[in-house]
Image 1 (cartoon, rainbow, N blue to C red):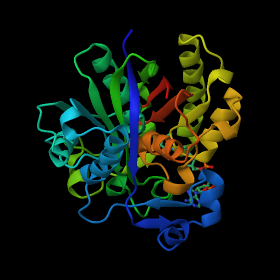
Image 2: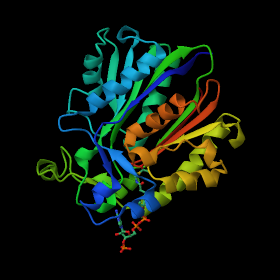
Image 3: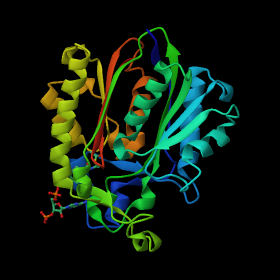
Length: 323
Ligand code: ACO
């Protein structure tokens, strides 16, 4: 039996920090409201001219260094992003160039909003298990600050910029045990940008194609869906909740994370939480949290890890793995 296994993790947050007190000066909000309703204390924002692939490059290099891999070893690059540098080439191709991967590796972007990294990991796992590829770089990277309305207090306090990456390699040892990827497009209007390249383009042209969200409704669907996908994932692997050493959830909101943990009866000290440090970084959020817990020694080799995410679309997904 062939597996794909994570051999390195990496992440990067831009240096510029925007804390809740900074936001108090921009919109009618308060540090206390933001912390109580979301758990977010600060977020990182890309500098002018710092693109999604710039953030991805640093995260990817950190993951490759941990895995002991060079550019020549990578034969698959997948970048999950909702905020690509350009319409084309893909951010994955731009990243490939920046990393000096000149071996004609496969490279493409995928778009599943906040679930993007989990989708990308599921796809990379299938490439490796089908023996067409041996060593993948899987990245979630975003500069969401570019699509925020900085006068809308209901969204600009939530989202931010960052990147996370893993190296996923072919292995005889168990690594990724299963991935579960879902979507339901009927919820498109609860979380979206109204303008794009072929619809309401005037909004894009005028800089008004911002993230819009019906937060309360998103919250309810997110908690129920995330609970269900954990059950689906454990059932598929004949495992119990107590078999999971660490839950690494999408870092959207501490209340969603706590409500999901409670529903699952998973103690909060087995849940990796980084949302207070960087807000909701969409596709970057799961690999950012994973990297933090690997590097600070919480997550250890051989442990069972459950990744899960939920986002616009709606999309949702999970991955169960032996680290
Ligand atoms: N500061 C102060 N007051 C605010 C702010 C703010 N930043 N934003 C909204 N309010 C006000 C509202 O106007 C409202 O006022 P009103 O009662 O006078 O009308 C009041 O606070 C309550 O608003 P709600 O929207 O009901 O607040 P809620 O407790 O639901 O919190 C939040 C809002 C944080 C957005 C919450 O709904 C949420 O977390 N939703 C999940 C959405 C999410 O995380 N999305 C991320 C993308 S999807 C994903 O990644 C899972």
